[in-house]
Image 1 (cartoon, one colour):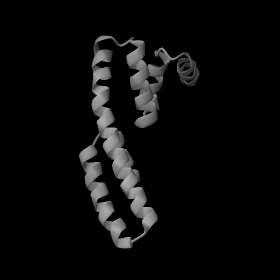
Image 2: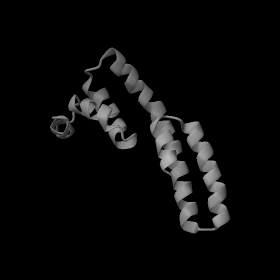
Image 3: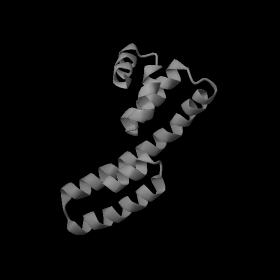
Length: 111
């Protein structure tokens, strides 16, 4: 599952889906209900992440023209940190957001 996570983090959803399709076949052959459930849940999370990526394109466009927009920084920062696991790019955005609690925490984490 680590390889799938790396593919998702890089935005390569198609390869992640193909890898999970192979994992689905293998998990079914094992007849291990826990493994089957894990693979099924991971497949759903990839579909959700891909849909979320599409939604974030709007905020990415806003940030290209208005990099200091607090609402767009909040959305993108939360997405990058909490969904993508990209804290290096996400924390500076949260530090420019309009959420005072997250902003303060992000600023502390950066310094």
